[in-house]
Image 1 (spheres, rainbow, N blue to C red):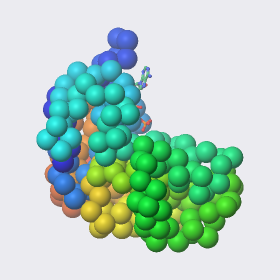
Image 2: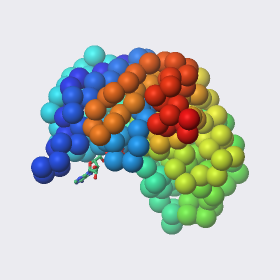
Image 3: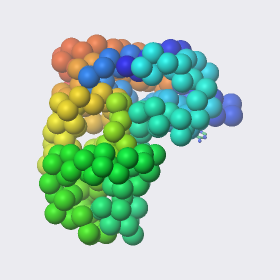
Image 4: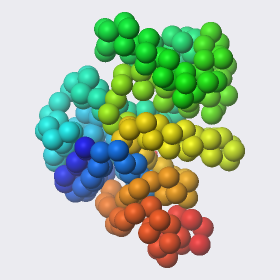
Length: 233
Ligand code: ATP
């Protein structure tokens, strides 16, 4: 569904990503784990067309390596950025509708809104509340709900658990699993290795810009190197 081949990113003299190759099969959850500054966000931003890069990216068999961000989003590959980036002064409903800006099928949009409200009943209850007054977990739901409004086939999420209390982290990962069960493919970037590996079908470990290890989520959870470096021994 999404294939990244030999991705390289440079920021001035910094070689931030070194030949990163990732395969995200249709219908799966794939996660990229790694420490601060490993290059996780850069990988997602490069795939989304937001930073200059070298290497090849294929989405649904199509070469999107040179595509502009709008074209990538229109093709169904959507990034949910770190820090959630919802619009605090707009209502929940308005935030969600912004996610559908590339569509013009009114009936279809209404149907998708209903689907999103079904996935996140709390967003329906709070439709007229300002986004900025939602709790951290609710804002994360809103960010994901907004992404779903464009009816994507692949969602890339940058640190969905960042800054959330443990109970909310659990909830966010349950939501991720629920969205995946609806047929959406996910590429997830996380510092919370434990939660990410538990939900992921397949995982990659990124260290200073390079993939150093890969395997199924359960294999990496059991891997001594991963346990020591990312799971606190
Ligand atoms: P974190 O978990 O802290 O967000 P990350 O794994 O997502 O980290 P990136 O944000 O991708 O890592 O950063 C990778 C490296 O590239 C870091 O050394 C960072 O300082 C550097 N970097 C990222 N963005 C820029 C930029 N716009 N200009 C210069 N250097 C950058």
